[in-house]
Length: 262
Image 1 (cartoon, one colour):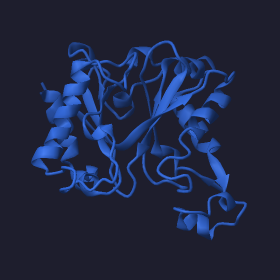
Image 2 (spheres, rainbow, N blue to C red; image 1 turned 180 degrees about the vertical axis):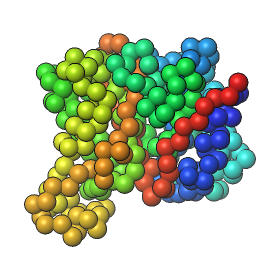
Image 3 (tube, helix red, strand yellow; image 1 turned 90 degrees about the horizontal axis):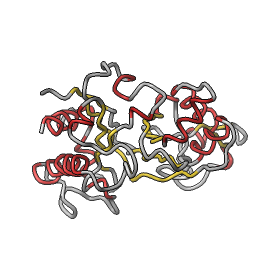
């Protein structure tokens, strides 16, 4: 229950804008990310199948958070919740970071907490998209694959996309980056630098004022800055897969982290 309370403190913070997420026609759910010792104490799954089912802690805590939004907030389909499609994150979406498999500082440490502190981080996000890369032979190639795997986020012509994307890096991919001596920020900066397209290729559909005003050959980045790229490590030890959890656009929802008080 203290995990649920900490998560709801994030949800109810005005900076998270749960009202916007709850009533929009776009699909966002509330993504709960757990870090620290409580992952083991409560039996969270951060390894094989980390984004799927099979672990009571992940499923019930994610569900409890959603039930508060759903029942006490009135965000039910065809009522306040006007999502045209939605996704399963509107049922339950709780991830634990695989800190033991990560070569880098975990998310909560990156965000200013002690490694021994248990935390939850809340992200407004769309459904995850799997990214396979079994053939890259360098960190540069792998960063390009993972970055371009996120290039269709929200809309293929929405560049830049002013919201946070969460990359869930699988342990095999993380080890390849680490073997090249790359830090987490090196990966973030490489993705940001790689994923760019000429404005002339983006002037369709749901494009942006920046694209419309740009020279046709100007390279436009998918995100306004590398700060819009967040990274955690999760998943099984075997299998060169990562994933990206798409952003919740137009919500102005900040990524929020709270300690779990016990």
